[in-house]
Length: 244
Ligand code: SF4
Image (cartoon, rainbow, N blue to C red; front, top):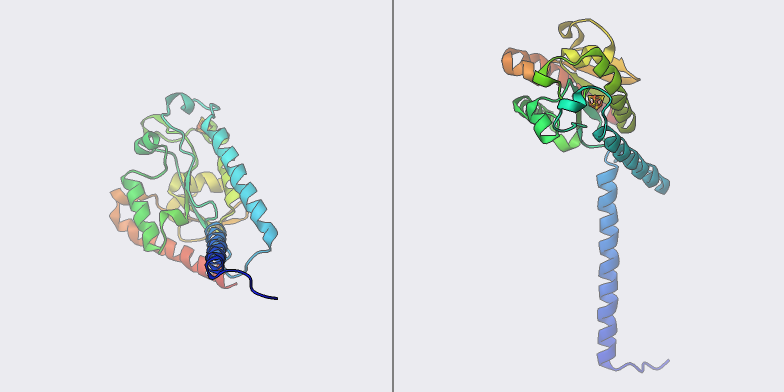
């Protein structure tokens, strides 16, 4: 067949083809980036295409839960809180840190562990080779008890189901319970944190490591050594999970 195109139209056609190829290449790269961002938990085994949908549904369910908690007035703390502190971090996290309840800074900002104790927790997470965006952080109570008093049994009873649903949706490999109150509440025990820490326990089928609360470390810096031992056990467990 005779080539009837003028050199000018051939040029235009080549330019157009080039721009189509560039655009397709850009879309493929974007799709790859999205996959890495969403499914970093299982980088070694690319999932079948159908896993993308449940992952998105999980996130929608998490958003529904967040909205439900944001409007919660089940206990008296709803009257005194400034903000609900639902939780913050990666919904695909392998580690979830669970503290006791929001303090003044957290109540003000609506985010968990943002005060001095929060800064120390951030440093602990960094020492583990992670960033806050790699883990999930929340508390047993989502609203601040006035004057930072201890949570009351009825407040825990009403609020703990939210935490359980958060943990079900995230399905972490490990929970790190920060402080005596979180550890005792989750494990339903009166055993002191000094005896609980340093050994994995189980909460709802998930391995749980109790350790000291960062606020306790601010008052007792010598206990940092034990916390470091506990987080090293967590890191070892994560590595073992990666290999198996
Ligand atoms: S502490 Fe929990 S149960 Fe009480 S109002 Fe806040 S979200 Fe609801």
